[in-house]
Amino acid sequence: LVTHYSKSYTNLSSLPAYLRLIFFGGAAPAVVGAFIAMTTLLFADFFPQTNFLVNAIHWWMGDTLGVAIFTPLVLAWWQTRANHFFDKKLLESLSLLCISFVVGQIVFLNLFNEYLSDTPKGYWMFLVITVVALRTGIRGTTLVVTLFAIQALLGAYSEIGFFAHDIARAGLSNYWAAMLILSIVGISISTHIAALDEAQEQILGLAFYDALTQLPNRRLLNDRLTLALAAIKRSECHAAMLMLDLDNFKSLNDTQGHHVGDLLLIEVAKRLKRCVREVDTVARLGGDEFIVVLNELESETPRAINQSSSVAEKIRAALAEPYLIQVAHTNGSESTIEHRCTASIGVVVFNEHLCNLEDIYKFADIAMYKAKATGGDTFWLHGVSEPPKSEAN
Image (cartoon, rainbow, N blue to C red):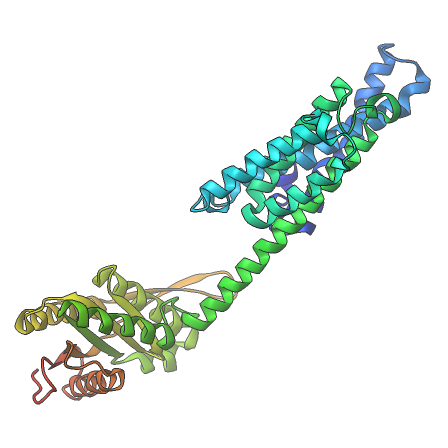
């Protein structure tokens, strides 16, 4: 019923979303459910009319608590990524789960009661749920809350532990309030931490990745080039930089608009990534300029040059293929624009004799402009096995 009207109610990304779930998925519908159930039982003479309101409240409390505890458990394990709980911190997660179980036994089922009879054990569960929420996220939080709810209910039924007298004195009202508050506290902390992590990822993304193509920007490219230079010093292999500039990109921007140009740049980024290996790097410098860094090339210079030339030709051919750009219009319609956009590619191959980032950029830029001067849709090779002296096309 909840997901039928809005998917946002099942998104446990924030405390307001969780509270909406409790209200619209639990508290509000449970009023109707409790009224129907108690009216049916009343006409069936299961209890006197004077107990109608009390029984209806208990029915409503049970349904609401079930939604508040078990529904988030199902949603958290169904919707969220596995690395929120069982990931590289597997040992820590399992340890916290075991500690939570032991604490639940102590608080609700009188484990070690002979040693801890005078200890204010009721507050321990809030300490545990705080640590669990901080360290394991919403998956671990919902699991431990459910574990505590089951243990507390068993203790109340057996008349031992923290809620030993709650059934007789308060009809489980204290149990209901404590579990609801515990769940809200745990979800609050876990969603807040998740929001902070997401914000940190976004900040890192803005700092190191191009917002349009999601490729590394110049800052991250320089970091990876530094690692590549360190690697070739150790292994005595070669690496290569390919600097690309699209030949007729400006005409597309001028005739179709920048939003169409952005779609072309996204497609160019996808084609570039398909042309290289995972160990290589594809980056965007800005505008229509891209960089490809080829790592772990052959140690022999001629073979390294052949490798980089093959990749450059592969990229040239891939980028020269026609682009079919799907453009969405404000009126809801779509149209397809066909565009041909070639590239001028400058290639510089380097090894331990050339380990200066500025020189590598400079030689790649010179080679790229020489490729563009020939008419584009080609690559120009500036090979470097020693301090560079010659250029070849």
